Length: 131
Image 1 (spheres, rainbow, N blue to C red):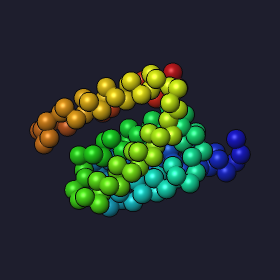
Image 2: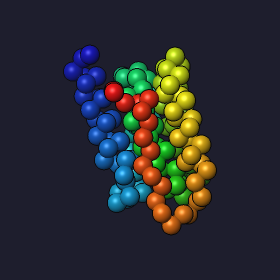
Image 3: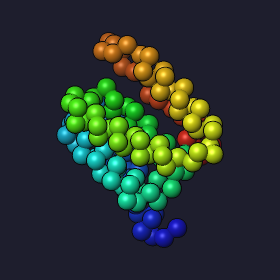
């Protein structure tokens, strides 16, 4: 991989870590700006997500899923949906384990009652890890 590709990977990873994963203290505007940047990266620079390598693209998918409860406007909803769609398309279709794990976690997330007093547990996708 080139130095440029490595820089793109690192930048995307930092955006996800700083603004999406555990972003309860980050302003909503900053979160959705980060999502817009990540969505553009997924479209224009797929190497930033390892061309769909589950450990890289999955990390961003997790961060996006954590933002679903924060969506307050139709525009924000469209932005998150577009970013999710783009990143999910990057995931290698041959990686059935990653898709199965993702599907199970999404069903669990959607089944959780909206506005519950307890925060939703952090999502973990074994299919998206290097282990």
